[in-house]
Length: 464
Image (tube, one colour):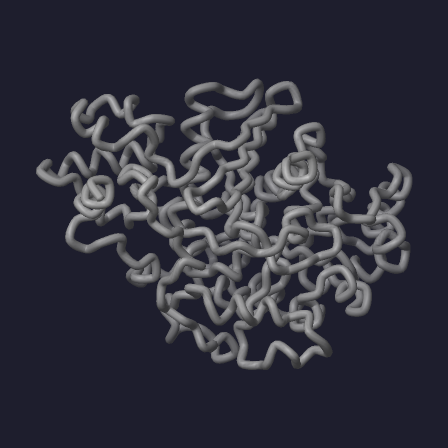
C-alpha cells in the first residue's frame, strides 16, 4: 500500500495519463523528406539475422469486415485480440476514409501492464507522460531533472542521478525501469548486445543493439508475443501476450543508452543513433502506444525521425495512417513472397490484406511522405528462393520504387523451414538485381546468442 501511495504521488493529480491524449503536432513539409535517406538503408542492414523480426506481426481488424471473410478460422484469435486492445485514436478526423474503424479507446490490461504490489513508483516513471512527471513536495525543476535522467541521459540506477537529493533517489527504489533484465548476452566480439526483459506481470520483451563504425542501431519490440503465426517466426510460435505500453517501448531505447554509457561496445557510438521497430510484435497493430513512444523519442529524446524505422507485415489501413503522421519516418514492409498463394501460406495476414492492397498502400506512403519503402524478404529454402519469385519481387519493388533487403533465414527450433545455401542466396540476389531493383543481402549478426527476435525466449523455453 505504501508503494502504491508513493506511486500515485509521483504521478501527480493527473494520474498515469492517456497516451492517446497527445495534442496534434505540426504537419511536416513533404518536400523536406523527398530525398532518399541512404543512411536508413544501411541501418536496415543492421539486423541480427532478423528473419524473425519480419514475421512476428500480430494482425488487428482495422476495417469493418468480419474476421471470417477470408475462408476459415485463421483470424479468430486476431479478432479476439481486436476486441480487447487499446487502439487509441489520434487525430482521427484527419485519417482517410478507408482507415476509419471501430477503435476502442478504453485502457485495459492488454494495453497497459497491471500495477502490482511489487512494482515500485520508480518503475512507473516511464508509464507517466513526460509532461506529467511530478515529485511530491519538491519544486517543479526536480521533475525536469528526473525527466532528463529518464530520456536524455538515462542511467542504470537512480543512485546515478547525481543532481537529485539522496532522499529522492532512495524514494525512487532499486530500479526505475518498467522491467527487469532476465538475460544479457554479447556477440560479434562485443559489437552486438541483446537483452531479454521481464515485466512485473511476466511478459517477455527482447531488444538488440548493434554497433557499427559510425552508428549504433537498436531493434526494439512493440508487443509481448505475436498473434500472426507466420510459419518461420520464433516470436509467433509462442502466441500473443499483450501490447507493450508506450513507456515499455521507449524504455528499451533508454535502457540501451544507459547500458552503452555504462559499458561501451567494441564498435559504434556510445548511444543509440537509429531505432528500428523490428523486434517482437506488429508495431502497426499497437498503433497508439507505438505512436506515443515515437513522439517521445523524437520530441523528448531528440532522435531524428529519419533514423526511426517502423516495420510491418502489412496492416494496410495503418500504413495510410502512418503516412499522415507529422514526422518523416521510414517504413519497412515484410513481404516474403511475391504471389498471394505462397504469401498466404507463410504469412496468414495476406488473406486479409493481399499483395495488391499492400503495394497500393506502400505506393501511397511513398507519394505522401517522399520516403522510399524498404521490402524485407526472408529467404527460405524451397519456399520463396526461386527465379520466378525473384522476378516477381523485382516487378513489385519497381512499382513501389522500393529497396529490397534479402535476409537469409535464421532457423528457429520449432520450425521446419531451412536456410538456403550461400550460392542460392547469391543467385536470388542477382536475379532480383537484373530487374533493375536495388537489392542487398542483410548482414547476419548475433547467431550465437539467438539474436533474432523471439529466439532467446524460445531457447530458454525449450531448454528450461
